[in-house]
Image 1: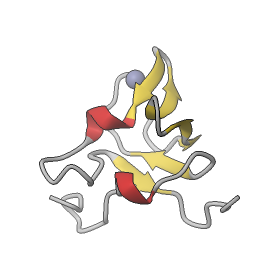
Image 2 (image 1 turned 135 degrees about the horizontal axis):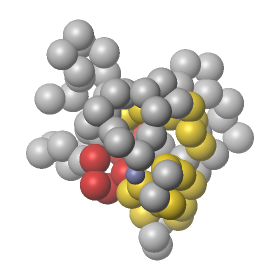
Image 3 (image 1 turned 45 degrees about the vertical axis):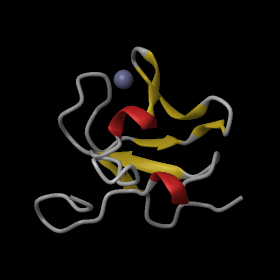
Image 4 (image 1 turned 30 degrees about the vertical axis):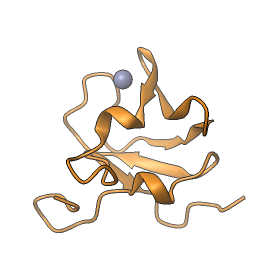
Length: 81
Ligand SMILES: [Zn+2]
C-alpha cells in the first residue's frame, strides 16, 4: 500500500533527502503521532529520524514495494534545502 487507509500517500524513501521533514502517523511507541521530524543520515548509513530510542531507521518502515514508508508522511511545505 502506498497510502494509508484514508488514501493519504506515505512518504517515498527514494524521494527523501537529509534535511527534508516528515510527519509520523500514530502507532509508534517511540514517537508521538503528528510529530514533525527532520530526515537525517546519508547514502552510506541510510536515512533515519530521531525517536526516543535514538535513531529510527526509515529502512525499517519500508513496505513491500521497497519505497513506501509505512507510518511516515511528507510534511507539507517542508523546506527543501
Ligand atoms: Zn523509534
